Image 1 (cartoon, rainbow, N blue to C red):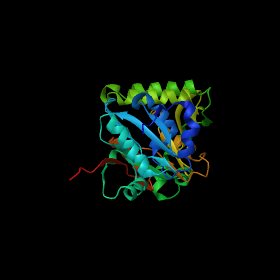
Image 2: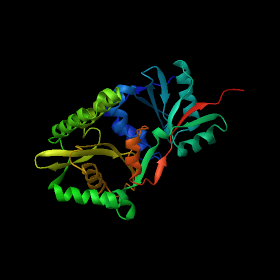
Image 3: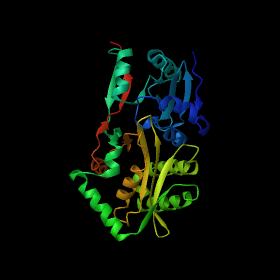
Length: 302
């Protein structure tokens, strides 16, 4: 059977979220907003086969096909076998990415002793309790509260939800942030992130995003946005701030977290990509889960 994949577009939000929101997987890869905003790079596609959502994309500059773990009420073994057929038909052995422990357990039950799991710390997701980020209670968050108090003393500010009127101001701050972070040293990564972020801001409502910004005077000095990943986990996809305003990152993080609906117990602030500064910043908020994600291939036949 040949799977009829189609490109992921804004119009596919409801059908994809009908699988991801009720599901158990809380890794950022299952955010519809991420799938759609990054599809320019990964040529992301989807298909629904026998009540399973299948996701296919291209990596390594579009030369290598890969898949996410099938999600839904369909037969997992059958779905993975279909993915393998599709992969082989495209000239590649099966490769699945973003496989968490929850997915690993299901795959092991369907394919006992048949798969190899290769973790990569750089792509682990940082997951926090929403209440921790919103209240910053306790000794472990003392330095965060100090940053916020200093910011409040220095700058009269207001928190604003992101609306279409605010988007140009957020893009202006992103442009300032981009220029401050030398793109020469980051290669294409920052350029890709910029393209994804711009698409997300320009299609904010269609992607189902919510976000907020900090305004000091007439200037937007920080903004953030995200969307639900599943029924109990909210993903924060982007956070930008003007580093000239000390504490701006801390205040936008806390203000936005305090407005995430209470049904989302967990907040996924995504990966650190092996960047030391980002790793240190994300660890400083005391994640309750460091969500390991694996590359999965089939064991060689002996």
